[in-house]
Image 1: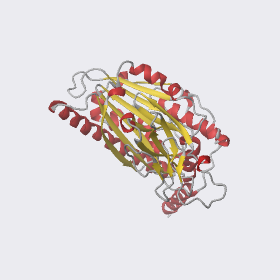
Image 2 (image 1 turned 30 degrees about the vertical axis):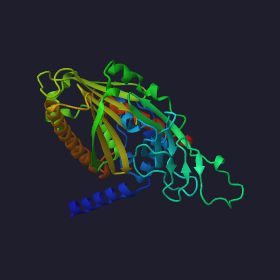
Image 3 (image 1 turned 180 degrees about the vertical axis):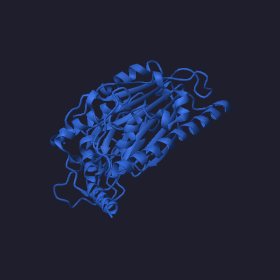
Image 4 (image 1 turned 135 degrees about the horizontal axis):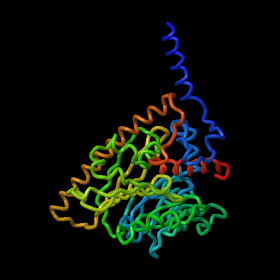
Length: 381
């Protein structure tokens, strides 16, 4: 009987932990030295309220990867995106300038575009046909002649920040974000002369993961789990020489490659993270960008875009790329499985926050410190 009573109490506690309103304690948000650091407490990963707050204090106040240069090569080429709940449209103007607009018509909030496209001459609302030039100015609003004091020249689409780095296009909703070059300077230096901006996009593969977006990012930011989760990848990398270096807004994980491997050969693996949700996986003659897209408190989507030096591979290179895709899929399935198991543990009520390894989890600590800072600045959002 006591055992049954104890189980009932435990179950009640678990249900209560998952339904309580999210109220982060001040101690959870205080800066932590790496040597004494703990992970973020579980409610940050499970609470819908925390998820909603992050849309404002994390995603709307950071640079977000939304496209690559090949998608926006000519006038009128455009991509649609969403950042922090705000629909966006990035378009190449007739003057060659990239601009990012709210994808929300100023008439009654209809979309200017619902999918990516090429060569548009104008941006036409899908709801009532109001038409904007590629610079965001309202060009025509038919049947508005009887609207007293209405002047189309007074109407234009709101803009947000847009910048390109090595062929990758980023947007920022909040004007207070630091320049993109400040975020990526060290990454740029590490890449050196590797001309990833000239490499051709080949394909996108997306994974739906039943885990909070931070659960996935945490997993990406450390090699601590390699021997236990990724046997094939662990054989490819040198765990003893696996290093993580952190900057202000990024971290770099690097490892020498097994030179005997016939897929990637000699060289090094570079895993670059740009706060809060962009990753660049760079192996010899292959770039893979990862963007972690939050869906809700317990789900995210991870988009993998593959780039290679040649747009016209020969038969041997096509075979190598197929093996690269299969190997990457194996690693991602392993990551998805462990992240989903971790998310279940975070939601169970059994866990609050554990200690981090100063040797192996400094990248996780760096990410969590950025998040704590964002939460402390919540009043400015």
